[in-house]
Length: 608
Image: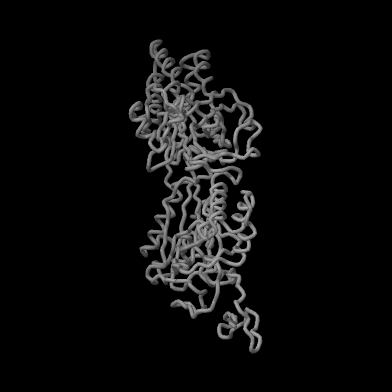
């Protein structure tokens, strides 16, 4: 008879966890142990390969009959568990991502401002992979064995799907254990991020540009970026811009050998290393020896992975059960991917153009995406987005990449073997106007995915401030001294052709430099007469209060950027023969890459 013990809380004594052996008796097979309280116990449980979650049911049997220990670990390990310890110098790895526009900001209701631009998000992570773990002897657990035997003779797919929900669709073969800590840092704009990063670099090099940094007497080599951000919060420094925030979380307890940890592990944090990543897994049906049960379990696995458990996988499509059809008569068992429409992370909206993008996603089995539909609406009431003035619906395949009828919508990027991003340029927009864009994916049965939308207001009209300054000088020279009829007409024609935004800047520069000779509106009325002056000055009221306010900025610079796009001549594209992974290559036959010049305004000095 064998008695099973585990190490006591004090680390010295042993605690009996099986029944005591009767004196002089043979108790036969030892009672099977639940492994959920055991170090590396997740290895014995099922695993869902899609959700990356460990299942509730224990698939493999765990025993403690052998004297199994690993270097650096006091606890006895389950039989057959092989643990490889990672060298200390390779354990502690730090990663800091490049700051990128916050993806949450770029979709849905986008509160975009042309003054500050996109808010940014940066991720920091320190990971200590301490152990590589694998199990080299596989015996199925009693619970899994009982569940399989209960299905002897069963043919209902639902019974096998229920088993998969309890035990997962895979079992774990190899995994990594250790500690992980991550922080997310949000910035209101790129200037704030750049300023904080430059200050951190100065401190890391020991230059100490400010009093706050001098107070932190620490080894600069272990001052992480999140620690520096946290120190600014704690000191309440005035240099900490509004809108900067940081959230951190840790998994497991930071090993003493890693100097990069930022979050102090609480008393409730597990002292043992935690499961970081499953590196190798195999389908659970491979553990089944009964051929009939194995085949039915494999079919149920495929059904649950690709057909929501409500249909059979036939080659690369789902044959749905009769109960898995919608009210429109279309099959619903194969879940449709949900494309998320967002503003481009690279190109911010201009006054007449936005760049939209989404990720093309298509599972290898079940669903074939044949098209995307994009609806564009001009919203007339900013408080009530149900009030729309115009609506356009375009098919990505029929209208945009075919070159049929989309002078205002052009592809900027299409999927290829390396990227699944679809990027679309939408032109012909009005400045300072709210638009709503809605996207659907369409599969080969005609079914539409859930919609995703972006609502954004285009920036104010672009102005050339250098030209406005020159015109202000020209008007002053025309008005200065005696003004002939010809000069009056020249001034009138010049000002009338400007348009509201440029007229605002001419007025601004004129009054900045020449107000001592008479304010601009008064000089216009005096030189041109009330009627002509009224026609010119009435244009000043054409702008919103927001744009009007921006045009009072002391400095407005004009920026120019280039956008590459595909100019497609008309060609008929058969959506059912569409190969998305080769779309970039295929469109080279009918589309030509061209460059579009886009103008932006920068407001203020932006030196903060």
